[in-house]
Image 1 (cartoon, rainbow, N blue to C red):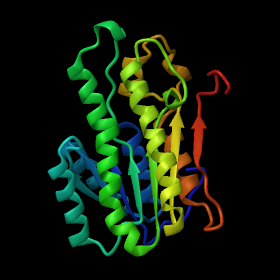
Image 2 (cartoon, rainbow, N blue to C red):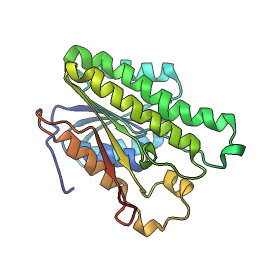
Image 3 (cartoon, helix red, strand yellow):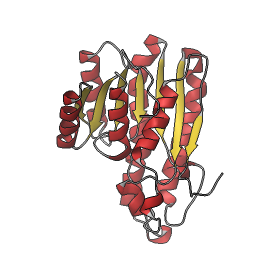
Image 4 (cartoon, one colour):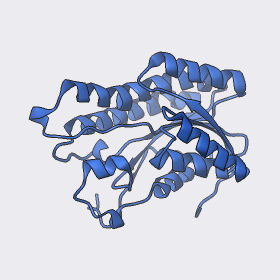
Length: 243
């Protein structure tokens, strides 16, 4: 890691932590001495991550989570309440993409994208605030996308969902400022993940960022002093279009 803030005594929950960006964020934050609660549907992948982390001397706790199911979200947050003294950071990373011509796009695919990317993120924020508001402290980081402010062909539903994540982020940042809770968005461009490969098969994978690049951006945010706040960070592949 090129940047390693000391996150000792930080309890961090990460959604979509079984692979890609989420897995990398879980590993990097755990390596900075945070207590990491890694959540996703794929419990076996989470257990593998937790075992590897334990062997490296890190603290990662796997919790199965179906972010489309409100009761599953509530159960996970209840488990966190029972097992830990606080929840300091929520990183909303879970996301899905469905792509295709808008005229032919199915309502089921639209619902799937919005349920995970928008509704799930919203519900996790609600539950996290049950910890953070009484603490008068906390940090919510939403992993958005370059399509949170751009648009590409055949990505209308995914783009709409990430614009919604940006709206949620901006509103929460203002609403929660008086409660000493920071809210930021990270908007990555092309990252070498399954989702990006499906969305942009035209891209040269050798030019894509790695999940670790996004994880280190998250570490930067978590290392900010109490005097500083960042609203959003756009991280693009070096050969991508500036601005």
